[in-house]
Length: 87
Image 1 (cartoon, rainbow, N blue to C red):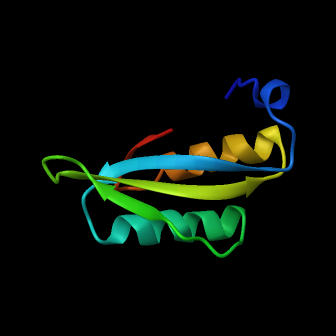
Image 2 (cartoon, rainbow, N blue to C red):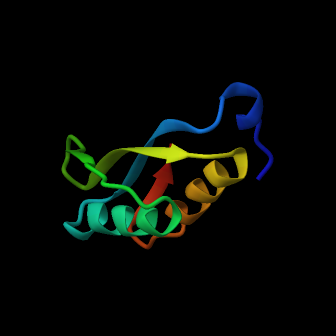
């Protein structure tokens, strides 16, 4: 992953990740579980359903410590079964 996060952000910092995935009760749990492995913290995800209810968006603030750490969060969240997009 070739990003410019290190040029745009000052680390460590909090970054809001928005995870879009299949509307399933397990989605927020999977996202938090993944983040606990990468950046242990007390997370409070905000979940919003899509207009048709097929998808949910999970917004969550994560403390990232470096460009590489931020990239790994994007990559690992994107690998989750129910996840379709990570913003």
